[in-house]
Length: 171
Image (cartoon, rainbow, N blue to C red; front, side, top):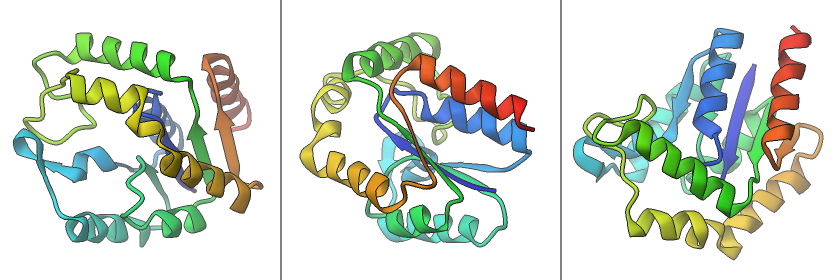
């Protein structure tokens, strides 16, 4: 089983990745975790590509995150399933704020060491505006168009719950 989870910040990608990881007993790679080093220092694209490539050599994997410059097309092509979180911006904002309250002053499990959770103006702008740029949205649309047979689009919590229930009943 090879699964890619993409979508907007704060939508629940990491949470679903962890659920699927436990359900299928399969390792998950959180791209945010390999994008940063300690204290929010960014790693190079080549470092990330190396890490992603190593995971993609395995028979089973879950890769969660966007990062179009890091083997994006290869991940989509190799995946058995692509899950796209297309929650509305205000829902994502709310969820990201809840996550901030939960992990404030701490590093969440799907993030690099010593990258304490933050909810600053830059991140708020990313959730509400920049992360939904025409280019980013076109990337998502291209995935849906190219891989309609293996792409699941989740637009709200009800659809996410239905998807999670279907996984549990089909195993």
